[in-house]
Length: 249
Ligand code: SF4
Ligand code: FES
Image (tube, rainbow, N blue to C red; front, top):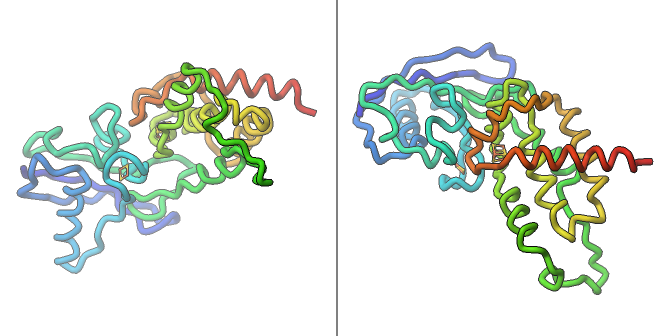
């Protein structure tokens, strides 16, 4: 396949940035999208030019690093896949492909397609954990019965890989789908109950401090989420937040 790539190049957070055009040739339809960028970067390096910076790690849909906008869609045209799981056969020979970073005030561009998503880390640090008393009498987690429906819902929420596609897709750059998944995966389980109120209040508070926008129930986040995280998590988090607010000191 021969393709024309229009890629966002930006030297750093304060650089204005611009789209640049790169032709690539002899691309196999069986390559992943990231492998196609590897081919381009190899050629750029051979020519003594600056390769395109992009995040990646696992390349199998687990780590959530390979975040980029492809032809105006987070993670490209596929549904419930990440960019590393997208193959070039999803595009036509001769096509022009537009590749841009996530765009959100809370995700500043580090370089080219790589953005700083440490805002997500700070939201997790605000409450995305279960405290365990390791006094020597710790109860084995497997000894605590969990209703099957709750275990399934918690597992579904836990599949969120923190990629940020929900934020990038949302017209308000809201992080509600991510935060609600991370709140739900713990609040649905017995182990998450002692800190349930504190957790939802602190994580939502940190989300607001980071500058993410509000949710206006458009639902684009759910459509573009590579893990199919449901909007039900946002409804559950809103209920939990309201309940925690009225009982807070
Ligand atoms: S909710 Fe979906 S889109 Fe948002 S961070 Fe998690 S996996 Fe990515
Ligand atoms: S590189 Fe890990 S999800 Fe794509």
